[in-house]
Amino acid sequence: MAVCPECEAPLDIEADEIEEGRVFDCPECGAELEVVSTHPTVLDVIEKDEGEEKDEI
Image 1 (cartoon, helix red, strand yellow):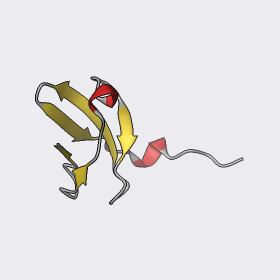
Image 2: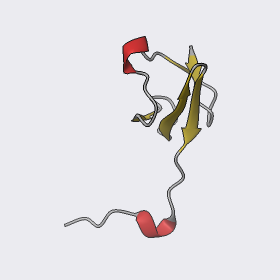
Image 3: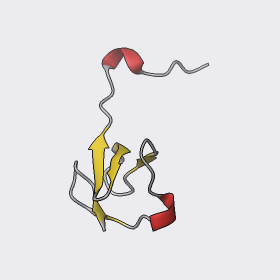
């Protein structure tokens, strides 16, 4: 079972969904996570810089 590195919540991720480079959001804290390793499953929080905010149209 994978765990969110930001809030330590258990993540219900199916084995076929885990692949290196996949990005998804933690349902508990909303952190954007990337799979950096599959054996064992290691997740990393993707940090957003202030300059990366999306412009609303």
